[in-house]
Image (cartoon, rainbow, N blue to C red):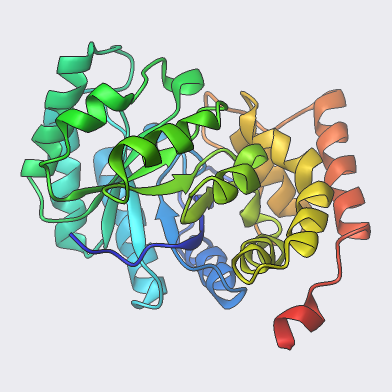
Length: 304
């Protein structure tokens, strides 16, 4: 299955009102602003979208609002993050009917499957939909590894087309490329090894901190693509203190707080998450403010 996924796909946030009800209008505005700033795809209802804090009907409503806001300008993928295969199939089919362009499929939540169970889970979802699928590998977060054995067993599943690699071990990009060639499109999925992933064969970047600094994220990848490695490295080094936040337990709160500091969204999150407090909140605000004050000059490069 041919896909055209590349560039920067932010895992967008779900915006909330003061009473913690979902603010669809603000969610649509956030998504539209990101597209205007140059992102090339949208991940709806990933970790940053607080997928597992939402009910099934809420997920459908948020996804429909995002698809409506995007208007076909870029691909919209949605996270499939469920406890079991039945729930995953149900949501995958709903996402297809709503108009999503693809799925970002996670391992089962809570239960840690053995390899043959993980393979069956992915096959069960893939067989239920015609949408192209990005598998999401993040062993530190989900205690499950999508390794070469799993990918080898899925080679014949035509609509499993992509792997979002969020393991901190960047050797996996080369190992996958050596074994599978171009069978799977690779995406970098951990912000603070994103440039390393691009150098090692990633075609795109699923990013969290892009929500706060989209222009810099887009230019980082654009600079790499055009061979301006000095500019890509300059942006990456400037960005790195914030990119480390993507690997922390409180990444959702930190990213939404960064959005708020930059005037792009609200820090409100759904329980059991709570907004950052105390020294941690002050630390993240200081990091974002420093990044905003020292951001690299890219506007002229983008306009050239």
